[in-house]
Length: 324
Image (cartoon, rainbow, N blue to C red; front, side):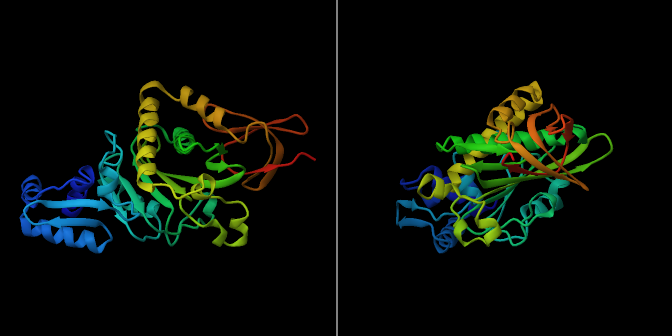
């Protein structure tokens, strides 16, 4: 966390109140001149800061930015978000997370205002304009690689529950899409670095169309996408949403490590938009049609075909279909 972010965190925690430059300099072990320079940079970035001689600095308003200082101020987590790598623009937060995963602590976050090469599952393109939430969380769960899909389902529950707290009917489309009223609002991409028998690190990439104009998306994306802003009827506070998401995710993750997966799987099943649907699954070189009747303990989708056969789908593309 840079000194500028620490200054911002102090101001956010005391928003509307004056904090003296002398106090900031003392608490952060820098000079008052350094504090003044950081305040100037924050003002240039759009932060409305009142500077009064002999009184100090008061934060009156903030730009819509997902900076580390803003996210950390008031964040109620023990592990997630203690270290946040912030970018105004990057290719992909997952790419950055992979590059640093082995050298940072668990719970480190990579977050960006815009991605130029965002990716979804199976190499699909993911449009990531400003106004969205594009972040990756680095985890080190110490589990076998075969259990990695459990973390994907856990992440889906975390995102859906955070959206439900906004009053939205968010549901999970297997394996990792969050939908609202039948349209996609979020996707999750999990990548791992592993030995034969243990995961060294696991990266959960989460993309959310928050305050995004999906009407500007290309046709193939526009027709099936929505945003939190559109569904709520107004722009959401992205910082507050990220804070609540990190708190929800950490709570479920710690429960998973302490108590196992069964409770989280039950929550996933209750939020599923796929169970009970007629689906088309494209997996490797074959296509399967049938009714999605459940998800097993490892996160695999169980499909009953029209011929009555049960198929276990570990990975693949899932489309909800109308029965014919």
